[in-house]
Image (tube, rainbow, N blue to C red; front, side):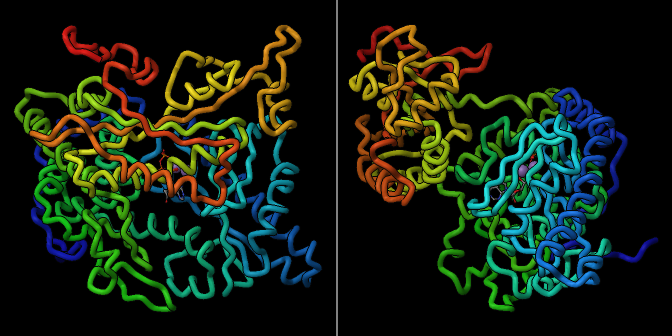
Length: 547
Ligand code: 3AT
Ligand code: MN
Ligand code: MN
């Protein structure tokens, strides 16, 4: 027999191989995932490979062009190289038909981030046919500077890093060596991190196939249950994948279905805040900080630490709070019961993937956070700003003594467009009134009119009507409230709400003339129609209750 090998920081719990019953359950799981359209088709995968080959060529040409533009020596231009890497679901092998390809461009030191934004788009355009490029949207100011695009029907998130120690980037380069980080600035560090983490993650699992099946199932399950996404205080794709990988290490020969069973049982019983990690944490060097609760109070505050495997190790779940953690523990319990049912032949995999009942059953009280703007341009940034602060309100409620047991953020926002004729009506809209909602975006003419006069509302609509029309863009975030038993019904959350608003209105990009943020209380029977999916039954007002 093979020499024993240990995966991760402890020995395995069980080295059992799958039984025929395990394999049968696994086949059923894969069938269910297929029915859910979770796997990309062979043609789709072929197309992605073709797209990536094209990007590799474009990157090499872009790096040559920058060298020429900078008047560098011909030998430097000839040897510059350049290489693309992937990270995210594509790199993990858990992508579906709707997934993007998260792609990193690695360039030698003489090509910098400004060069990327200046030269990459034109190089790409000159080497591609117009009809294949359906979107090309550079966002140089993002936390991770990015070019978002759609090429040959696939969404691409393209990020960039220039390696300060390399005058040439050969095709056999890997990013696993931590010495490659030397001299990288924070932006570069963030950009290479995704690829480094994905690489370590895949290398740390005993069997990639079982890991992929289980990760696909966990991604689908967590999305359906409304517990996926770091912005709102849940684990994101990487954190969920690290948890699955840890279970794979503990059951190195198990198939995906078995990994799933063990996942829920173990995560339910885990001694949080004991961290989930895939290997020992390498100490901080090169002035880089790594996760260390012994040293840093912020790290000690993490409730469900999931630690990234690549140096410098970080906590992928630093946004998890008391409420979101409790919701996850409840979900682990629910899933564990369903898994028992599946093993007993009383439940099926699709029961596991049933959609949450956030709007239909879970709460009587909701908070609606309404971000409203007078122009589309303002709203593009404002909706994102408010989104990034929602978890501050949740945390504030968690920490207040308002008699709230759970404050549960919904993981998807609702974008709406409204048209109205007076400032009174504008006021009603920003407080959540839905009477002025319109289905369609206004025409380009109307939009141009608005941005031209800056304040909106002065543009009349194509001469059809002379009434002034105001277009108001809103994005609404919902927080479901569960009151503590015996607490009085009158919620007082004015303090956390005020604090949340201060965070939003204190931001540099906040413009009080164009933007507003409101937090209003909404009863379950007053929720707007568009939060419900077809077939869902909306709560109705009890007959005897007074409003
Ligand atoms: P999909 O199959 O694409 O839905 P995914 O896991 O690939 O799932 P994303 O493409 O959204 O998910 O994210 C891939 C990685 O990109 C995860 C994270 O390291 C990074 N990332 C995602 N969103 C952001 C963001 N807003 N800011 C910084 N990094 C992000
Ligand atoms: Mn992705
Ligand atoms: Mn992406």
